[in-house]
Image (cartoon, rainbow, N blue to C red; front, side, top):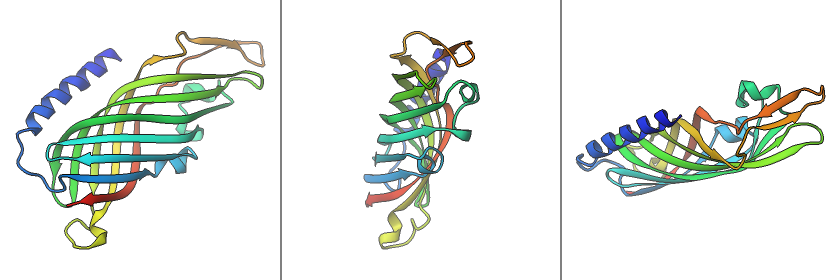
Length: 207
């Protein structure tokens, strides 16, 4: 995990130095508000993010709430161990260099830090709460289908992304061991998000 974070940091530094030398890019000095599509479809929750784009950089803040990890969204080792896993909130920020942009498509990389609260229902009688702190990065693409047109439609943006968030610390300091209904000892480890994809849709304000 530490090696993965180190690789991300090295890549981030290299890309940032390269990005800073670029000429003026389209869609600079814009504020975008985007809503997550994956969260209501897969997690019965909600996510909103605000992204500000300069010529070379993207600054992001995002907040998710009422997320229910279930079905395909719940990682395999936890499917058999948990009755339910909820995240009342997932919040954090990111910053990164713009790699490419024209009026239709933009690509950027962001280094991100996130805090997640989890409520894990382990048995009918036992529920635990804890917070995870994650570090990682994401590769984001902005698609503006009407970017070459004039008028209100120009600001519509679709943002698919692929991210990797590594759990670097947790208030569940040690693996939590409990006894299930069959009187078998089970160890609950802090829930890892690791590699995942997301899709957001929103609107950009500015030039």
